[in-house]
Structure formats: C-alpha cells, structure tokens
Length: 182
Figure 1: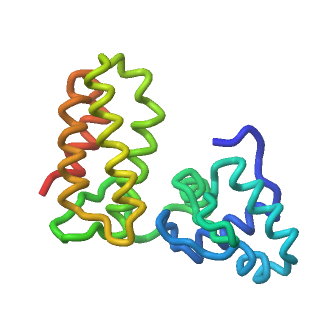
Figure 2: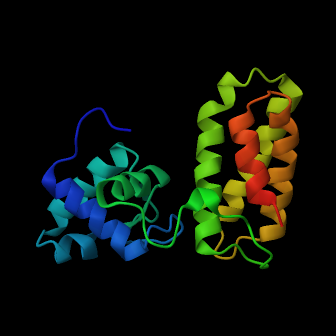
Figure 3: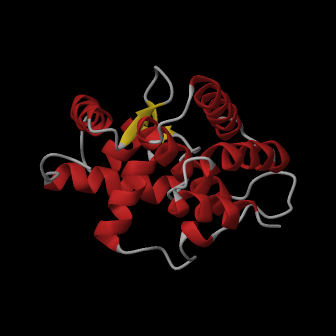
C-alpha cells in the first residue's frame, strides 16, 4: 500500500478522518477540523492531509479543505485497528433498497478499485475493455452521488461479470456473483 510506514501524526490524522467519516468513502469532512481536534494549526493540517493524499489514503473533495478517506486509507486503518464489528464489506451484497447502504457502497468502491488495478492483467480485447471501463465509470459516478442507485450499480456489475467471466478469474467472478445476489 505504501512504500514506508506512516508517522505517528499521519496515523492519528488518518484515524481521525476514518472516525469522522465512519470509513465511508463518500463522506467529506474539513481537514482543518481534523487538524484542530489534533492540536494542529491550518498549515500543519494541510501538510499532513497533502501527505495522505499523496499516498492515496485520502482524497481532496473541495478546494476549501474538504477531504474524504479513500478505499486504501480505510483498508489501512482497518488493518491497524482491526475490522469494524459490522462485518466484512466483502460479505455484503447490494440488497434490495433503492439506494446503496453504506456497507454495500464501501464494497462496491473496493471492487471498482480492484478492477481498475487488475484490468491490464485480464487480456481483454478492445471491445470488452471498452465495455468494462464504461461500466466502471458509471459505477464511479453513482458512488459520487449522494444517493447511488442500487439498480444501476447492480446492472453495471452484471455487465462486468459477463466481461470478467471471459477471463476465467474465479476470485473476482465469485466476488461479483456474491455482490449481485438478491
């Protein structure tokens, strides 16, 4: 995840970000509020937040200091603190609610990240790759929404499942099947 360990200040800042966002990658908070809670001035909070953004553990959301935790940042904190009691996001399915719930949203964000990182190793032809990327962009757009639509995400995942099934990668195929199961 990172080339070297986080310092104590960065760990505290990331933990506070995780706590304030409850690990939800769609929630944004002020980097200055987090810094203030840790006894930092605005410049120090900016420097630590920039360090975390550079490591892709946090994401900039607004130019006025709004940040959010990334999937990688959430995973790192869960590794440091242990998995939250609510259960593993990997075991979540989308459910039947019109809008994705937090756990399903986190799972979808993780799968989108994993698929983007592994796409080059699938050996897909141009048309399949184009279809996969279009579905990933659609899901990212939904995850960026305040109310991501379960039906849209489910159909994108079904489409992706059809493309990924051609690769024979049983691990990702199983993850996708569990997620779209109703």
